[in-house]
Length: 157
Length: 71
Image (cartoon, rainbow over the protein chains, first blue to last red):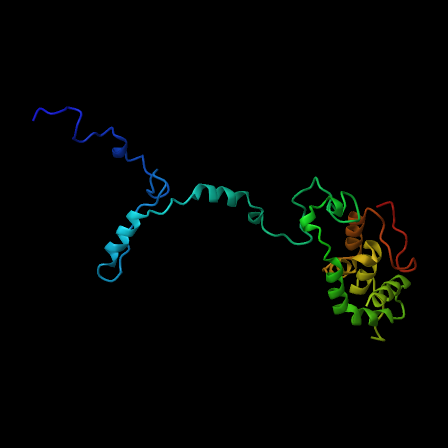
Protein backbone atom coordinates (compact mmCIF):
# COMPACT_ATOMS: atom_id res chain seq x y z
CA UNK A 1 0.00 0.00 0.00
CA UNK A 2 2.83 2.37 -0.70
CA UNK A 3 1.15 4.30 -3.56
CA UNK A 4 1.35 8.01 -4.22
CA UNK A 5 1.07 10.01 -1.04
CA UNK A 6 -0.82 12.78 -2.84
CA UNK A 7 -3.67 10.60 -4.05
CA UNK A 8 -6.90 9.71 -2.28
CA UNK A 9 -7.93 10.35 1.27
CA UNK A 10 -9.74 13.22 2.96
CA UNK A 11 -8.16 16.60 2.32
CA UNK A 12 -9.81 19.07 4.72
CA UNK A 13 -8.21 22.06 3.01
CA UNK A 14 -9.65 21.21 -0.42
CA UNK A 15 -12.20 23.71 -1.84
CA UNK A 16 -15.00 21.17 -1.91
CA UNK A 17 -14.57 20.53 1.82
CA UNK A 18 -14.75 24.21 2.81
CA UNK A 19 -18.26 24.76 4.33
CA UNK A 20 -18.08 28.49 3.51
CA UNK A 21 -17.65 27.74 -0.16
CA UNK A 22 -21.37 27.44 -0.94
CA UNK A 23 -23.06 28.84 -4.02
CA UNK A 24 -25.51 31.64 -3.23
CA UNK A 25 -27.67 30.53 -6.14
CA UNK A 26 -28.38 27.15 -4.64
CA UNK A 27 -25.55 25.09 -5.94
CA UNK A 28 -25.93 25.65 -9.64
CA UNK A 29 -22.15 25.58 -9.73
CA UNK A 30 -19.79 27.22 -12.17
CA UNK A 31 -20.49 25.07 -15.17
CA UNK A 32 -23.01 27.52 -16.62
CA UNK A 33 -25.73 24.89 -16.59
CA UNK A 34 -28.41 23.86 -14.14
CA UNK A 35 -27.90 20.53 -12.38
CA UNK A 36 -30.29 17.74 -13.12
CA UNK A 37 -33.02 17.56 -10.51
CA UNK A 38 -35.19 14.57 -9.77
CA UNK A 39 -38.88 15.34 -10.10
CA UNK A 40 -40.95 13.16 -7.81
CA UNK A 41 -44.57 12.15 -8.32
CA UNK A 42 -44.13 11.03 -11.92
CA UNK A 43 -45.49 7.67 -13.13
CA UNK A 44 -43.19 4.71 -12.67
CA UNK A 45 -40.08 4.96 -14.84
CA UNK A 46 -40.61 8.49 -16.02
CA UNK A 47 -38.64 10.04 -13.17
CA UNK A 48 -35.47 8.29 -14.27
CA UNK A 49 -36.22 9.09 -17.89
CA UNK A 50 -36.49 12.80 -17.03
CA UNK A 51 -33.22 12.66 -15.11
CA UNK A 52 -31.47 11.15 -18.13
CA UNK A 53 -32.96 13.82 -20.38
CA UNK A 54 -31.76 16.58 -18.07
CA UNK A 55 -28.27 15.12 -17.91
CA UNK A 56 -28.12 14.73 -21.67
CA UNK A 57 -29.26 18.31 -22.39
CA UNK A 58 -28.67 20.49 -19.31
CA UNK A 59 -30.46 23.82 -19.12
CA UNK A 60 -28.34 26.96 -18.97
CA UNK A 61 -27.97 28.53 -15.55
CA UNK A 62 -30.25 31.46 -14.76
CA UNK A 63 -28.49 34.80 -14.64
CA UNK A 64 -30.16 35.91 -11.44
CA UNK A 65 -27.65 38.60 -10.56
CA UNK A 66 -28.11 40.40 -13.87
CA UNK A 67 -31.89 40.24 -13.65
CA UNK A 68 -31.84 41.65 -10.16
CA UNK A 69 -29.59 44.57 -11.05
CA UNK A 70 -31.75 45.38 -14.06
CA UNK A 71 -34.82 45.39 -11.85
CA UNK A 72 -33.23 47.74 -9.37
CA UNK A 73 -32.32 50.16 -12.11
CA UNK A 74 -35.80 50.08 -13.59
CA UNK A 75 -37.92 53.20 -13.15
CA UNK A 76 -40.86 50.92 -12.42
CA UNK A 77 -39.50 50.37 -8.94
CA UNK A 78 -39.96 54.08 -8.30
CA UNK A 79 -43.68 53.60 -8.76
CA UNK A 80 -46.09 55.77 -10.68
CA UNK A 81 -46.89 58.94 -8.86
CA UNK A 82 -49.92 61.13 -9.21
CA UNK A 83 -50.20 64.28 -11.25
CA UNK A 84 -49.60 66.46 -8.22
CA UNK A 85 -46.55 64.60 -6.85
CA UNK A 86 -43.22 66.42 -6.80
CA UNK A 87 -41.06 65.79 -9.81
CA UNK A 88 -38.44 63.03 -9.84
CA UNK A 89 -36.25 65.19 -12.04
CA UNK A 90 -36.12 68.64 -10.44
CA UNK A 91 -33.49 69.97 -12.83
CA UNK A 92 -35.86 69.61 -15.80
CA UNK A 93 -38.81 71.99 -16.30
CA UNK A 94 -42.11 70.14 -16.03
CA UNK A 95 -43.08 71.46 -19.45
CA UNK A 96 -40.05 69.95 -21.20
CA UNK A 97 -41.31 68.19 -24.32
CA UNK A 98 -44.54 70.14 -24.74
CA UNK A 99 -45.05 73.27 -26.78
CA UNK A 100 -45.72 75.71 -24.00
CA UNK A 101 -43.85 76.91 -20.93
CA UNK A 102 -40.13 76.68 -20.17
CA UNK A 103 -37.85 73.92 -21.42
CA UNK A 104 -37.45 72.33 -24.85
CA UNK A 105 -40.55 71.85 -26.99
CA UNK A 106 -41.95 68.74 -28.65
CA UNK A 107 -39.22 68.94 -31.31
CA UNK A 108 -36.81 67.74 -28.64
CA UNK A 109 -38.68 64.44 -28.28
CA UNK A 110 -37.44 61.33 -30.06
CA UNK A 111 -39.22 60.74 -33.36
CA UNK A 112 -40.76 57.44 -32.28
CA UNK A 113 -42.71 59.00 -29.40
CA UNK A 114 -43.58 62.30 -31.00
CA UNK A 115 -46.46 60.91 -33.07
CA UNK A 116 -49.20 63.45 -32.70
CA UNK A 117 -52.14 61.58 -31.24
CA UNK A 118 -53.41 64.71 -29.55
CA UNK A 119 -56.11 65.55 -32.12
CA UNK A 120 -57.72 62.14 -31.68
CA UNK A 121 -57.51 62.33 -27.90
CA UNK A 122 -58.84 65.87 -27.95
CA UNK A 123 -61.75 64.86 -30.12
CA UNK A 124 -62.69 61.96 -27.83
CA UNK A 125 -62.52 64.06 -24.68
CA UNK A 126 -64.35 66.99 -26.23
CA UNK A 127 -67.12 64.77 -27.60
CA UNK A 128 -67.59 63.30 -24.15
CA UNK A 129 -67.90 66.60 -22.32
CA UNK A 130 -69.21 69.00 -24.97
CA UNK A 131 -72.95 68.68 -24.09
CA UNK A 132 -72.21 69.64 -20.49
CA UNK A 133 -69.82 72.39 -21.54
CA UNK A 134 -72.54 73.86 -23.76
CA UNK A 135 -75.00 73.97 -20.87
CA UNK A 136 -72.49 75.89 -18.76
CA UNK A 137 -72.02 78.36 -21.60
CA UNK A 138 -75.62 79.47 -21.10
CA UNK A 139 -75.24 80.41 -17.45
CA UNK A 140 -75.87 84.10 -16.76
CA UNK A 141 -72.37 84.87 -15.38
CA UNK A 142 -70.40 82.79 -17.83
CA UNK A 143 -67.37 84.78 -19.01
CA UNK A 144 -66.93 85.46 -22.71
CA UNK A 145 -63.62 83.59 -22.72
CA UNK A 146 -65.46 80.39 -21.82
CA UNK A 147 -68.11 80.96 -24.49
CA UNK A 148 -65.38 81.56 -27.07
CA UNK A 149 -63.78 78.25 -26.07
CA UNK A 150 -67.07 76.34 -26.41
CA UNK A 151 -67.71 78.01 -29.78
CA UNK A 152 -64.25 76.91 -30.89
CA UNK A 153 -65.02 73.32 -29.84
CA UNK A 154 -68.32 73.42 -31.71
CA UNK A 155 -66.58 74.69 -34.82
CA UNK A 156 -64.16 71.76 -34.65
CA UNK A 157 -66.94 69.15 -34.66
CA UNK B 1 -79.14 74.54 -15.00
CA UNK B 2 -80.86 77.91 -14.92
CA UNK B 3 -80.52 78.17 -11.14
CA UNK B 4 -76.78 77.45 -11.28
CA UNK B 5 -74.34 80.34 -11.27
CA UNK B 6 -70.79 80.56 -12.50
CA UNK B 7 -68.55 79.96 -9.52
CA UNK B 8 -64.79 80.48 -9.25
CA UNK B 9 -63.14 77.12 -8.70
CA UNK B 10 -65.96 75.17 -10.36
CA UNK B 11 -65.09 72.66 -13.05
CA UNK B 12 -66.30 75.08 -15.74
CA UNK B 13 -64.21 77.86 -14.29
CA UNK B 14 -61.25 75.46 -14.30
CA UNK B 15 -61.92 74.60 -17.94
CA UNK B 16 -62.09 78.28 -18.82
CA UNK B 17 -58.74 78.98 -17.16
CA UNK B 18 -56.90 75.93 -18.47
CA UNK B 19 -58.25 76.20 -22.02
CA UNK B 20 -57.43 79.89 -22.32
CA UNK B 21 -54.02 79.51 -20.63
CA UNK B 22 -52.83 76.37 -22.43
CA UNK B 23 -54.46 77.16 -25.75
CA UNK B 24 -57.59 75.83 -27.42
CA UNK B 25 -55.55 73.25 -29.33
CA UNK B 26 -54.86 71.61 -25.96
CA UNK B 27 -58.56 71.30 -25.12
CA UNK B 28 -58.24 67.67 -24.08
CA UNK B 29 -55.43 68.38 -21.63
CA UNK B 30 -57.28 71.45 -20.39
CA UNK B 31 -60.43 69.47 -19.64
CA UNK B 32 -58.49 66.67 -17.94
CA UNK B 33 -56.61 69.15 -15.77
CA UNK B 34 -59.85 70.97 -14.98
CA UNK B 35 -61.29 67.74 -13.60
CA UNK B 36 -58.46 67.38 -11.07
CA UNK B 37 -59.46 68.01 -7.45
CA UNK B 38 -57.81 71.41 -7.06
CA UNK B 39 -57.88 72.56 -3.47
CA UNK B 40 -58.57 76.16 -4.41
CA UNK B 41 -58.55 78.51 -7.40
CA UNK B 42 -55.27 79.99 -6.15
CA UNK B 43 -53.62 76.55 -6.12
CA UNK B 44 -54.91 75.92 -9.63
CA UNK B 45 -53.72 79.32 -10.81
CA UNK B 46 -50.28 78.73 -9.27
CA UNK B 47 -50.07 75.50 -11.24
CA UNK B 48 -51.04 77.27 -14.46
CA UNK B 49 -48.45 79.99 -13.88
CA UNK B 50 -45.78 77.36 -13.19
CA UNK B 51 -46.66 75.43 -16.35
CA UNK B 52 -47.06 78.32 -18.76
CA UNK B 53 -44.61 80.79 -17.24
CA UNK B 54 -47.33 83.38 -17.78
CA UNK B 55 -50.32 84.75 -15.95
CA UNK B 56 -53.65 82.92 -15.96
CA UNK B 57 -55.83 83.64 -18.98
CA UNK B 58 -59.60 83.58 -19.18
CA UNK B 59 -62.32 84.79 -16.88
CA UNK B 60 -63.28 88.38 -16.33
CA UNK B 61 -61.66 91.16 -14.39
CA UNK B 62 -64.82 91.56 -12.38
CA UNK B 63 -64.57 88.04 -10.99
CA UNK B 64 -60.83 87.75 -11.08
CA UNK B 65 -59.22 90.92 -9.75
CA UNK B 66 -55.59 91.64 -10.55
CA UNK B 67 -53.31 89.57 -8.37
CA UNK B 68 -52.02 91.08 -5.16
CA UNK B 69 -48.30 91.32 -5.93
CA UNK B 70 -47.44 91.87 -2.24
CA UNK B 71 -47.82 88.14 -1.58
